[in-house]
Length: 123
Image 1 (spheres, rainbow, N blue to C red):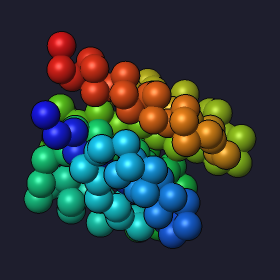
Image 2: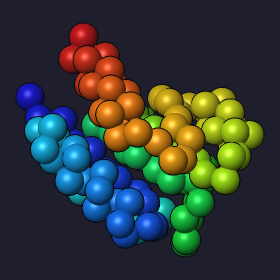
Image 3: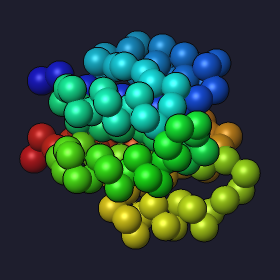
């Protein structure tokens, strides 16, 4: 069973690093460098999981989360937050995010969270 992941991250190096890691883990991955492009991807195709940075151009991660919950309620969302902004992570969880990770994060921790989401979906 393929598990499709969309990574919405405006920092190119971080996005590429996450994509490469997840691809090596066997996930089918796509990337977007802003929230608006990520939303277009989700409207056009089906994804099991979205990893969304909270601070992005064109549409921030919280607005993206809200829109994804409307257009693709089956897509789980993990938000990534920098700047020690735990308040925005708490807000995201209240708005229906599956999980969150503060930056900088360990990619192994991200993979564990994705594996858990994948297991939940397969149940």
